[in-house]
Amino acid sequence: MYNQLTRKDIEEMEAEIEERKLVIRPKLLESVKEARAQGDLSENFEYYAAKREKNKNESRIRFLERMIKTAEVIPDESMEDEVGMNNIVEVEFEEDGAIEKYKIVTTMRGNSLAGLVSVESPIGKALMGHKAGERIYVEVNAGYGYYLKIRSIEKTKDDGNDKIRSF
Image: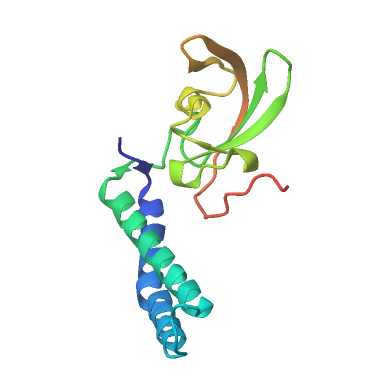
C-alpha cells in the first residue's frame, strides 16, 4: 500500500533528509569519534549512546526516503464548497449530538488527539468530497458505522500549522 502524500509533505520530508544528512549526521559522527577516543569501549556508556543516536538518525533517513519513493502524490486542492485536504470540518454526530472539528491531513501528519484526521481513516474517507449540510455514513468496519452531519467547512492553506486543538 502506498502512502498518500501531498507535494508539500514530500518537500518537507526532503528538507528533513537534507538536514539530517548535512547537519545532524556530521555532529553525530563526531560524537561517536570523541566517545571512542575515551578508551575502553566495553564500559563506555557515551560511546553506546552516541552510536544509538547515530543509528536512529540513519534509520529516520531511510524511513523518509522509502516514504518518498513509495508515495502516491495526491492533490491538496478541492472544490470551493466540498471537503478536501487541509480543510477544517465541523461535524455533528447523530447518536449523541456531539460537535467536533477535524482537519483533513495526510497519513504522515495524522494525529487524532490533536484533531488531525488522516484522509485514509474511516472518517477522513467518508468526509472527502462532501458538502456542508450533508448527512454521511462513516463505516468503521463491516458490522459497525455511524452517521454524522457536516456543519461547516473552512478552507485553509497548508501552512504547516496543523494544530487545531490545544491540549
